[in-house]
Image: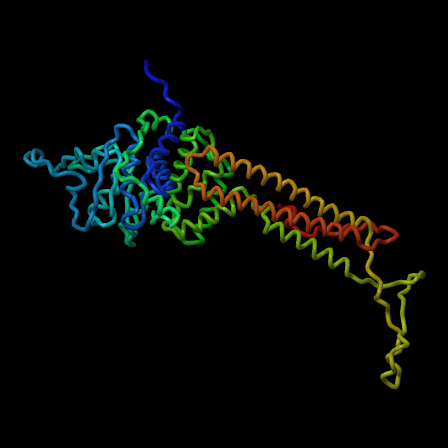
Length: 464
């Protein structure tokens, strides 16, 4: 009787725990390289030598059952035979220029290519078709390749046309550096001879099931809107992301959701975007910061925008409290005064001339005051509603982090802190808006209401 296997998500969780064992501070690159492989995409590890890039690639290979593995270090002297196999003598005798690809890259499922940009342009051009089309030009025909994923490694990415095209084939770009001072002692304590824990590798059927589930996941308006906003941001920052890459990014997000047993994308899946869009660590940090300011935060009710609205109410309240008005007597005539304490400064006694009295504070009708109060009440209601939204977002983030296989703990912590700071900013704005409301309530009142309502103070309030 065939034993019943646990769900794919459970197996992935166990698999990831096994792959990470014995690697210090490599949780993110291990998980994201595996996620890219599940999506049929390629990863590029960028960092100095001796940072476990090859060990990481070998472990990703162990996640796939019956997967052929190929590994090669490229130099400027590397020849095509080292990657694609030697020429077939039998084929040459029959006037055919073909390679024997068995045991080489065209027949591999998972491949690790170290110093991938050191090869000459002829090899890089041949790799372009293999990585993107899963086909290899062998003689007069094209050979189908069982390639799942290539993990490349490099110290730096050169700037030339061929390298740019090749660089674009790697959907996941993962910086890998030396361990931190905190992780150094753990690194020294590792046992180099320790065997990797048993891994319950995924077979073709499980990978196919994840792919099929991912195809059924829709891209809803929230995720599409955030992707469009990010695209505009990247254009402003002169970071080029090709249309092909955007399509692949969406596919990766769907695989992330499907592998966790979800039937729809979450906004928090978009935390993966820095590693798929920006070409270097500085750009990835900028995209990461952009996401922290946007995920879970509705732009129309962002603290920056609400601050402008509250400031408009505060300024208007101060203006109306300090406004003076002309003073009239009981007959409706303007009141005048003579200041007898002033000394005569000219022969005509100009300093003792009658003057209009402006000392009366302006008064307002109940209609005016009521309209102002209603405007602020509307703002306060929106702030309270948004605070509830943020509370729900924080709870949703906590739940997402609890069940996610891929979410980075550092990002989750920073995102939670960002939402908490937004909630605190909202509470402060609510207090300021309430103070402005009290200021309008305390305005001097007319004995008879003229029934004149004021114009809205902040147009952004209705847009929010």
